[in-house]
Amino acid sequence: MNLLGRATGSRPRASEQRTLRSPVARRRRGGRAAGAALAAAVLAVLAVVSLGPLLWLAKASVSTTQDLLREPLALWPSGARWDNLAQAWGQGQVGRHLATTAAVAGGSLVVTLVVAVTAAYVIAVLRPRWAPLLTGGLVATLLVPGVALLVPRYLTVADIPLLGLDLRDSYWAVWLPAGADAFVVLVLARYFAGLPREIFEAARVDGAGPFRVLLQVVLPLSGPGLTVVSLLTVVAAWKDFLWPSLVLLDPSLQPVAVALPRLLEPLPLAEQMAALFLAALVPVLLFVLLQRHFFAAAGASGGTSR
Image (cartoon, rainbow, N blue to C red; front, side, top):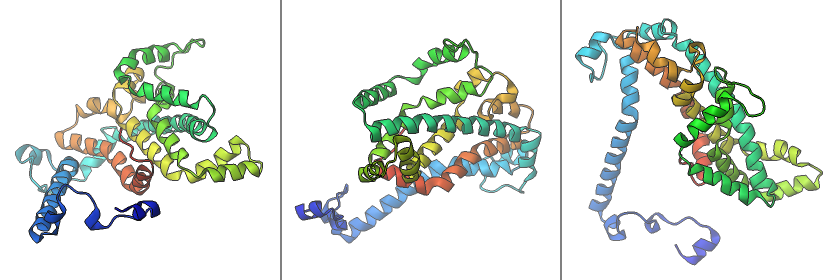
């Protein structure tokens, strides 16, 4: 890519893009065919590894127990047993525990967004003098292993300082710790920092205060970023097992990830697979519905590996 291209921001041509193969090898017909075959093979392996378990679980959820025991790796069941899903939903109480999981994930999402949006707004838009110190503190917390914070967090929830409240066996014991997520704050701060500051200055010139700028300027422009952190928060809350099993001892309050091992015991094998499929289906559907916003915001923020 020449200097003019750099200055004008033009995209490099396909022949100028850096790859693992040399330009000479790419110009050869055999080299192009080998590259295409290699790419197809890698994509096929990734598809099998990532989608294979979920597709097998979908097949097993409508199979009979005899089919699963006789030919567990068969591609198709001998007959679709849709009543497995109904039995797992009703008699297995998967539906009731999916509702409790939705309550846990929804509350965690609200608390996380309130904390993350306000903190990211201060860091990236208001930018007080102590913003770098706050950012450094948040980055430092990412280096602390989560297991090391487990006992202090549990003792705090069991006896809230100054208030003396015990939040165990209430959803607040899950919702409040979920808001202390430094990764989500940093992702949102990076996204807010990429918004045009001229819009903020114009809003301030028109008399808008910090609260109005947040509500009427920053949040409407941050739909993809908010979608990404919302999806990450909901999926993390949906699959979390350790923390809810510590603070939600009442079986009626436990999310499906905690209650599932107990619910599966009295069910036949085919209905157990149906219960597992129903429990895994919601996060997958959320990602499929929001994937366009997820990849758009991930590209804008330079990636969101977690």
